[in-house]
Length: 128
Image (cartoon, rainbow, N blue to C red; front, side, top):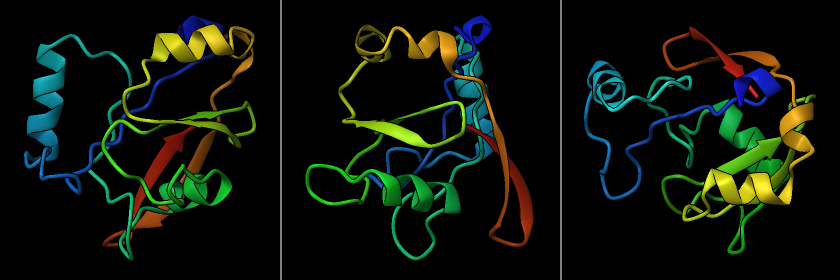
């Protein structure tokens, strides 16, 4: 779907039942061995005082059923070409279900890069 201007981005997180205890390198190797081709970023926090600015932004724009915090791994946000979240999806929602609801979006979304600093003054670029 990348050729249609749609990109899936993955941000591993270990805040949910410690399901992602591996290092960033181990996660990248594990997903690569399983054929994952979409961009995989460093492990981040998505909730709390150490939450990454990207997730603070996403959560501030679209809350969930029980508030704005992320309740479990694989919560998904669909953003428009300007990087603004337009919908939020619960963890069990499969990308194909999102595509059925927004077939036009998959042809119109263009990646946009956002730079931000977080943890140890490291620079990270994020594509929405």
